[in-house]
Length: 427
Image (cartoon, rainbow, N blue to C red):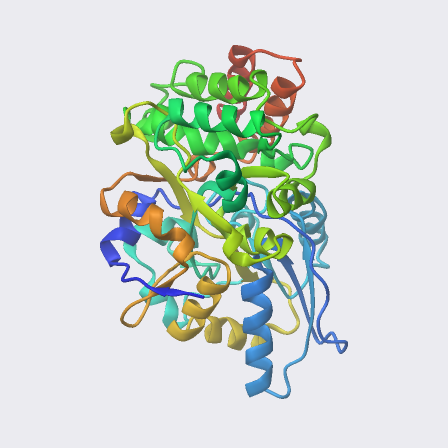
């Protein structure tokens, strides 16, 4: 059930920071089924898109009987490799998932620079993209993707597990450690971590860095771009130390590097684990794993003991784009134009628990997002970290070094040194 919650344009703009500071987290995976046996328009989406994309396609087909589609979904790592290879080889699907902004092999900037995406700038909805979001949708002034809105990142938690341990969502880092300790003593895994799935590795860092870095240095990305800052000499080190502290205290499930995203999701849904740090866009998968959707809630994951310094990450969710080589471009363009209608934007955003990109009147926001809205109002939200990274090398390096940290194969300083080296690489 959705809650009528007014979300102002100011809040939406605050979520992304600046015109150039708009992108997304390549953190949405999962497998879906196929739809429509005819297969006229081939569509490949990210798993996190399923509830919204499938609904939009099916609703569009009801009003357009000549439209038929074949729909499948891929985990994020397969999108980054297999789909990227298909695009380069010229045998890509007609419509496919794309990550807004820059920072990954399947990002809008990387694909549009390679001339693999069709220009959508002539569609009316593109004029409604808020100024602060344009960097997520546009390259060289042209719009290449559609996305329904913005997602936040925090802890998805099982209310019954918290109740069994007599704990409430924490507001500070020390409170988080206390909550985890009480859960562990109750025989409940405090935090489910499916680090075998590469994109999951980054999420705890992404939840902590707004507090350990951006609350103190809001212009950190600009300093990095100018060469006046580094990962190694910043609050990133504090975030990674805290990540490892959670592991050393036994607050993760056994063998996180051998646990998948799907397994971690099931652990939280069933109450075997109390929480998982995740993006709101995948909330539906956790609800599907729980006996009842209302068993789950979500709260901002605290990084410091100063409540005012606990900021949140947020970003434009994974979008869709038209392949530049599609032979069904007219049909796909009509569908994307349909997606840009305010009612479709709202329906899709509601289905994937994100804040709509724009709305006629009040937007419907999932009640689970309510604890995050004050952070947007108070300008304490920053874009997902990778959206300002200058290439597609930093993110996979981050995945790898976190797995090495969890496996005891590297140190925080060596991990951050590798990330700094990847950041400075040029094409």
